[in-house]
Length: 230
Image (cartoon, rainbow, N blue to C red; front, side, top):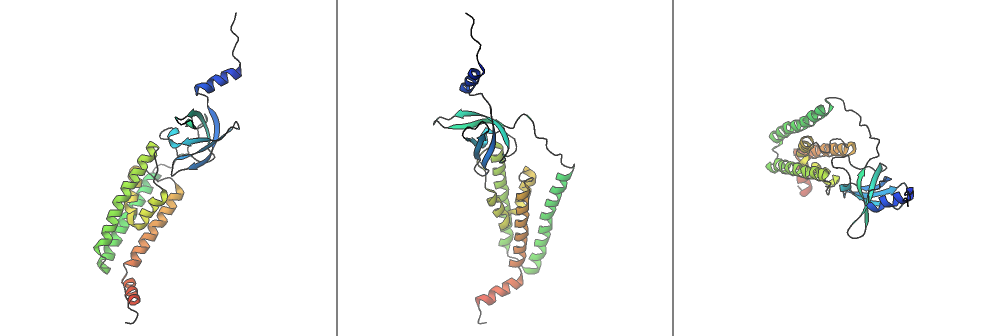
């Protein structure tokens, strides 16, 4: 007796049982700092948990609203999660960057460090800036570079990321020269416009605070405030 051909429904269930069926969905939520989110299924099923490690290594950071295809797997504790996540078959074409624009941006940022070093030397000679101020910039800059390297490694390995507010805070307290070197050498945090905007605000505020706090006028105001009767 000839074997009855398998129906489309039967094939579908076999594929689902083998765990190789791909499902279309949209990234509904994403926590970039913790590296996980949820995908809404287009077939009406329940949202599926997805971890950063499910995405292809070296791909762009996930974005809310991004169309995705994925497989569903069951963990050892009986929970389901997305696996082998990738964009749909139609590839997104990246806009070409003007040739040499990256090099010009890097040169400008290194120039900012050189300009600050020159400013620091002038201010130190004119206002007798304490030695610990320079030490603070040096220590926080080295720390910033180390932290940027750790965050870059976490991004490549799909691990836990360092919050952007921590990176910005390091720049604000004086580690921005080391942060610039880390950004350029490691090619990290150089394309996210919002972060770049906030980072340069922190640089401006730090340099402004340096000029205000080391100014003789500020020292005079502090001494008068401490001894109002004099």
